[in-house]
Amino acid sequence: MRKIIVFIIGVMIVIGCVNSKKVQVSTSKSSEWRDHNAAEGKPFYNSKEACKKVLGTLDVISRLHKNSLEENVFNGGMSSRKYVIIKDTITYYTPYGEIANIGSCSCKDRTLTVDWKEQYKRTIKYQIYFNSADTVELRYYDYPYSMDTFTYDKTKAPNNPTKILGVMQR
Image (tube, rainbow, N blue to C red; front, top):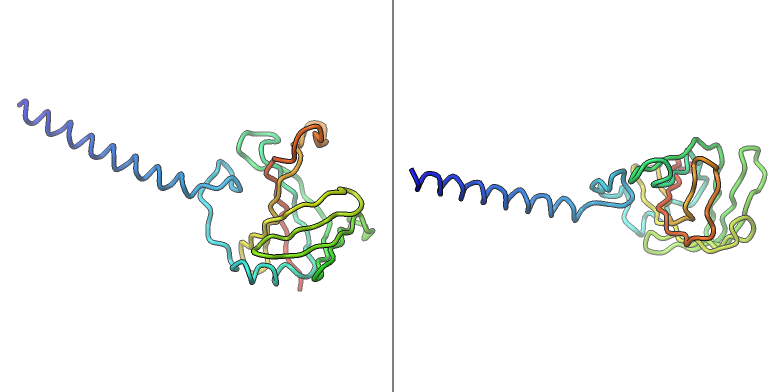
């Protein structure tokens, strides 16, 4: 009887270790760019293609801020703005077609670096992530955002994961 109990305990320990290893593997693939840091899928385009495919008009669907309403969840609203990205220039348009901001840009290794001249007056490095041939996320770190007051806390560093979701028109 004692041998059976020791055997059962040994099997339970082995199963526990195997499950622990699976959790560690799953955790290593987690991404801060997914709700609840879920696993990240493979991007549709490699880094060289992503820089070419982001050129054109990006119709913005939404801007999402992580942790603004719920911990580890992206929240935001619908948008009807757009970006026009040409080789070294980016223009940000309001829903009414007026220029809201303009900047110079460059792209390398899936990173779109934009030096905004007007509204933001800072350099932002956007990580380009295509979910499909035309749907894209521009991921960057922004100032913490409050969905209660619809304001940014610029007294803190821009370290809040934020992403712009949109569809490329070519």
